Length: 267
Image 1: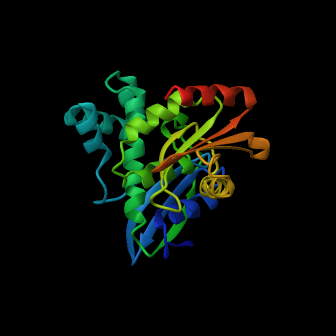
Image 2 (image 1 turned 135 degrees about the vertical axis):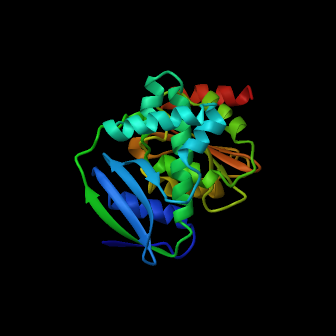
Image 3 (image 1 turned 90 degrees about the horizontal axis):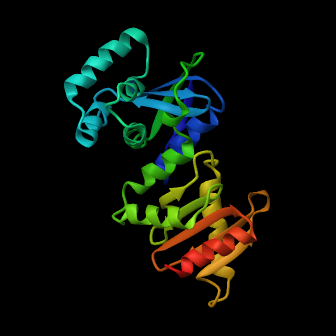
């Protein structure tokens, strides 16, 4: 058994960090308990989170699929019955039947899993027991890195137009780049939009924000809106410092940054 201490600021990030540090490249399930009662089960495959379930807790995945994707509840229940017998993942079975687009399943699973973990983060501490297994072969598209869950969970509380920020970030970035947009009014770390962060290390996100904050503070008043610096093996980082948000674009060379800057100039 492992004790996850969640006391202090940013309990959600602390919970994810505990799970990540104890789940590297492992296949199995965490049973999470507090005060003698079961809170949730978190399934891990290849060091990524596949699923989180909390009895009587956050909204069920079924509710999210019905509300957002228009799937009939009876259809989901039929597939659930079949999957319990076959051992197949329920969401993937719905996709194979043609009634659910892959992107919709990914979004619903991310929302469900982040919701369960956010509720768990309200505990002061959690007793965690690990049960290894061989892995059932989840499609990687429907599993999540700890960085993805951190970004999704922390940005849920923002009232900013997130869709607009994501469209802008996608328009600025190129394949192979890492893009992050942070809310600067809620320091030290509130990510709002992201691009290409699927495999990025959880620990690196707040550290990257802190590093670029120092770049902005040390830049001249004239240079502060746009700062470029080197991040070693990650390549260059471009910092776009705006009134309420800061956008970081990482991992490109001078030529590609020139194209990014040209797109910035066009608005």
